[in-house]
Length: 482
Image (cartoon, rainbow, N blue to C red; front, top):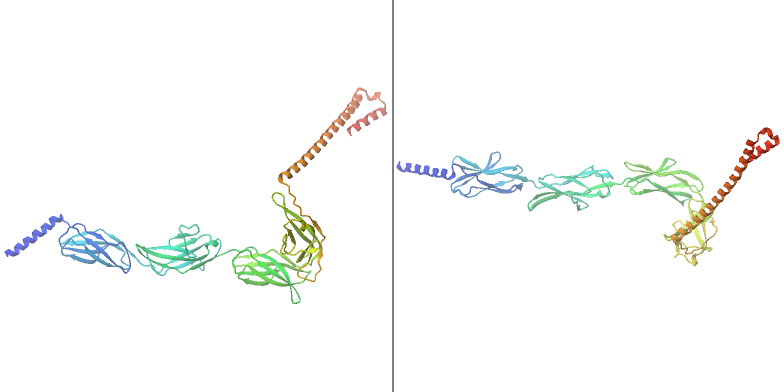
């Protein structure tokens, strides 16, 4: 009995010492651990109560109060380690709690977030497929099958887009273009990244080709002539300067469609039989896409033979300092749809190319670029039907062209013009002065005669004059008025 009582007394004194040491309560433990981790990883949390030498019970708690693990420290003062196997439900606030004979103390909280590695990145275009016309807009959404805490990187034609971009708008996982142009066309990809310290994971999408179509320009129609089989045919060209194929071309004759061609280029060709000298009607070309229908200007499908007369027109071209630099000789004919031209110099045929001259592709214009005595002389042209080698030539008269280096500065030209103008002003002024003087003299004489007649009529009554004298005075007065 005595020994049992002694042990009880010692126990009471021990716990009394504990209470005295702790001030009546257990201090707040310190709790540390990661704030973020990948799913399926194992993370370590630590809880400790410094300067404590008594046995303690530690608990890992997930808010609001779920006890995940319990560890006993038999000696006290040692850090306690908790191991957390991370899953997709591990997000939350974690704390540790210390127990000692009915007393508890709870640590600070650690906010923990689960990072799910990114998987299955793909691009979703809007519209789908991403085929639009210029000035329209489009969106690209970067979607993932799995993944949290993501950042996105965008690529256009394998070049990373620098943000902010002047041509693209990017908000989280969406790339937007409000008004697309040719610069926006091409291949796009996106990359989704989990960034966590030095351990990053990423996944890239497949390429999506964004097609930005151009609107069609007005089609242009033209035709050439060729001989096939037993007659002539018009080879009609319908061409676009800009636009995005495919394009459907329709040939209209007098408003009626006679041929249709769908092509992946910006030009189509149609063949129509024609008769030389006859008007085969009006041809037009229509270009169509899914949103456009455009008509060309009309062209008369008529082949007129070369007829009438030919004439050479000469024009000299001068530099800025009034030096003759070149001469243009143009061969003008009265009629002819497809003429072929030839030039002669001093009755010798000129070649198409030379050291001092050149011809335009159809030969209508001869350009003389070098001036010397050798290329001064008589020039003439002739024309015939290009589609008929048996047609006769239409010959022009010869024109004398002298190549002289006439140089007149701008100041000299102005001086000559000013002198001529001054001479005209002087002559006009002299004529005006002479006319004014003559009029004044005539007016003075007329006024004097008029006043004399009136004075005579006023001073003498009509009764004292005979009828012939009165009539003579009236006639003189009327003459003066006239």
